[in-house]
Image (cartoon, rainbow over all chains, first blue to last red):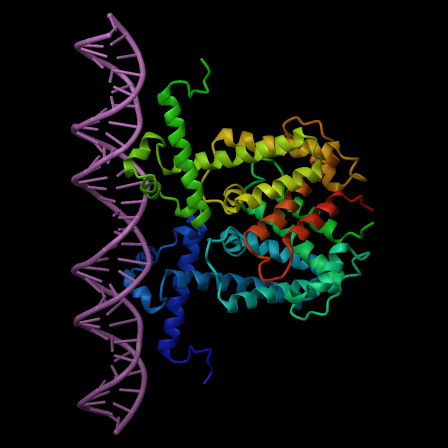
Length: 217
Length: 217
DNA sequence: TGTACATCAGTGAACGCGCGTTCACTGATGTAC
DNA sequence: TGTACATCAGTGAACGCGCGTTCACTGATGTAC
């Protein structure tokens, strides 16, 4: 018996309904943000009574956790797929931006303002490090990132988060730059901070990426 | 008559109570995030009945707008004060980080996940551009930022957001880099994404800043 | 193939809660003569 | 200085709302003999 159920009609039905619930939840989040998510509102949209949803999710928090999990999984899969088709770091960066723009609130659910006190379950942090690994691979595959840096030296001693990845310290450094810098442009774009500035965010993102890939002095 | 009231005892009392309301509101936001902010809860904390607050704020949205305004003003003032004491770009960056760490939710209220559909009043965007101006000044005061870049050329044609600031295109480019990159490290730090990675966020921030100030190839 | 039983999706009523906001009011503070 | 009036902070009751969640239930679907 596969643990990945969905064999019997009942199991198929269950996963179908669960999928519809999360689909409507995403719509709601896209419209009004994650804090406005309401089980009752979703039930009403589906023509069901509120309590019915408790057959599928133990609580509202449980649903949100599942959404966070879906978001991480979706991003991990998107990057993995891009890497599988031979995308380099630049390609992964573009895939990241496309993924973020496809559903800004989904990106922000993962990388945006956290709910104070919320702690993600362990399996989610595992997916998160899968994402990092994919990007780290792409960083390591690039030409050497220039001279050793002070931060590189520090990272040589603090590389547990890389989960045994054999990337040299310079690649670790590059990964952190890529992550923080792409997130910087992207999150300001998604938050609308470039609106009204008559700037094309795509150009800012591209310029950031070019600079990240350019050789250094 | 100064429009900056607070002359009569009643006016002084009014501004005092308003200040206490916003102070408690900040405490609440720091504890549970902006979406959990509740007028009734603040009133209860102050030993007042809920409706009493309507003497001071027309609505919950009104209070939140005032908090956003306070946050922008506080940051503008912090940077302005640092610049006034001769701080260069690096000094302003450090002042920014200190300000953000002093109250993470305050930073995130300004630069974090936006509430879909919320539009800030005009006076707030004015303060926002004051912040940009201060940073832009510091960018322009630096040694020339290296060779002209494609983005610099683009910015030469899209500089309305700089509100007539005489900075050369390279300085505009540098400002955007500073803004997006510092925000990148800082927001990931505040969101707790470096937690569990055994990394010192201060070092990441410092490395980002060093790289921003280093001369380019 | 048919019958007895178990599983389980979904309902409707109900609980308790806290929310934002309005309204008519009391009582204290300030103002004008 | 004292009195009449206006201003205004704060109260308490009330409205309507939607929330998450529980519970006992009905009825359909699946399982075992």
